[in-house]
Length: 348
Image (cartoon, rainbow, N blue to C red):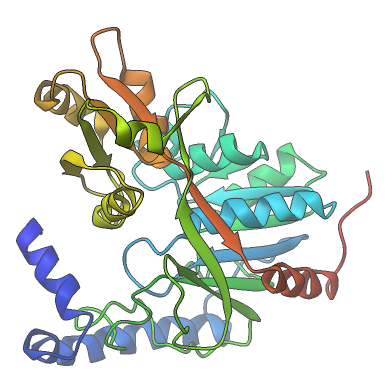
């Protein structure tokens, strides 16, 4: 799909205009297929794998990034603070392999996926990846028998893994025009027809009334950009310097990252929007040549785990700007209540 086509679709998905209406009939077929698939699991024609521990699935019902990975990280950190021993499973989008594997701090993003590597480094918990999340979870539990809760990153539509709780993440787009693909941005009808308890988390850059009941999380960039050692440089200092700043983002909606940098007071000499899960090993040599002399490159943490290993002495300075997600306390209260109603964390 060309960038122009993708841009036109993203705009069409936000309103019920001519293009969306033209795609409405195909969306009814898509919606029917989704309903049949759910029916097959609900009636037992297809079996979901039930694990011996609680499973929390973090995902979204809209296409594009809505903040699943930051939500997963915040959820895992909270569970650790509450005495749980969590593990994380993920498909590992963008990786080259297909077998179940453990993600370690020194893993390569090309082998395990950029988001699982970011989650492992941010939380320190066991992380396993596999196209079939149930297989990843079984391998994780075999290797780490003290794990008492599994958090599945980006698995809302992966019905083959039975879950005890879903966390459904929305960003500022809400449900768009309310239609399913390809006429709208919904992966499945909203609200869903399921008996699984769900917590809705609205991630907002600016205060706004949520389009449906749920909890609110504030999305903001950290005030500091960090280098490979973790040392911070205030964004205010970068904004005050005369040296050019270039922004790079290989995420679902790169423009959101660029806008947040601009709102932080930075004047960007250039922006490099890349495809989600972009192969930076292939793209970086060309981008490096395009970089203005003396420029600092700012990227997301997801891009940094792939980009930093590629840097040499001739490379420009590359800093990652962390995204800070702050859910309201009531969200974590609800999460605790849901999990404690099943069984609490294991004692060591």
